Image 1 (cartoon, rainbow, N blue to C red):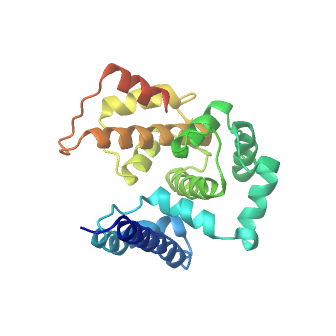
Image 2: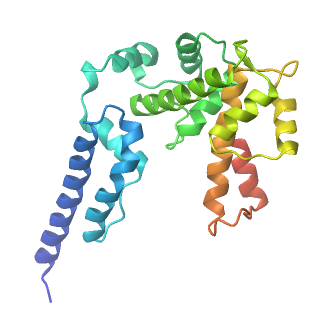
Length: 237
């Protein structure tokens, strides 16, 4: 039987290997131009290495957090912007998020939209976001902005129902006409959806779909929610 010292020594060795793998994988990912898009395609190799040690692979968010902790981003222009917005506490709250989004996209964003944008990626439930979260939020919002502009055929800075449908299909949402009618009634003003409401819709579709897929373990297209679970999901969007 191994002594206590042998056991502790082996345990510490495994911990060092795990820590090394996390940091090395994070450093490799830093070489990519767009970290948020490239992390997913790099996880297979990282997962294999972790499985050899008998550990679960870190999630995408854990890798982002590790990158944020070992990466000194002073040379990143976006980090300078983050410091200006976040202030001394180093966190962006809903009010600061509203200023940031309004400035970045030249659109007026309501406080409610800013809160649900924060909730979408607030995995530590702090009610605010750090630098890594801000970068991921901008990555997601820029994709949605690109889709909005492409779908706005008449260049009215709003989407008509058929333009909205085309945009959502492009994201992979195959919604029924009845579901589209509900969405248009909820998010349109005079049958047109502006960019702020489009963002609100996209956040809720993304969050709702993620929550549904977690419970649709058999990928059957159906899921079961308890009442309390349903309320928590509803209030997180």
